[in-house]
Length: 84
Image 1 (cartoon, rainbow, N blue to C red):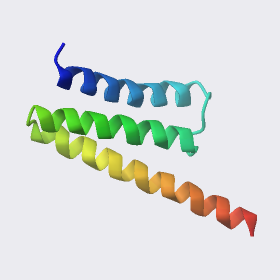
Image 2 (tube, rainbow, N blue to C red):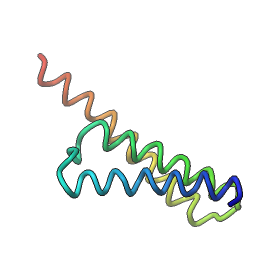
Image 3 (cartoon, helix red, strand yellow):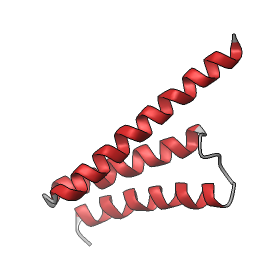
């Protein structure tokens, strides 16, 4: 296994772990852990795609990461709204 394979497999594994944990209600779909797993996984998968210069997956994983970051940030705004 090459370095890019290890990075990509780890990234995809984290995304699938988030999906599995959410599907079986071990974590919430709007919980921070769900977003952290998706951010880390998509960032790693995006990096692996950059290493192999495969543009379709670079775009897919970059957008996945940005959406996950936006969702993660939104969890903080929801928390702050409930505190006040």
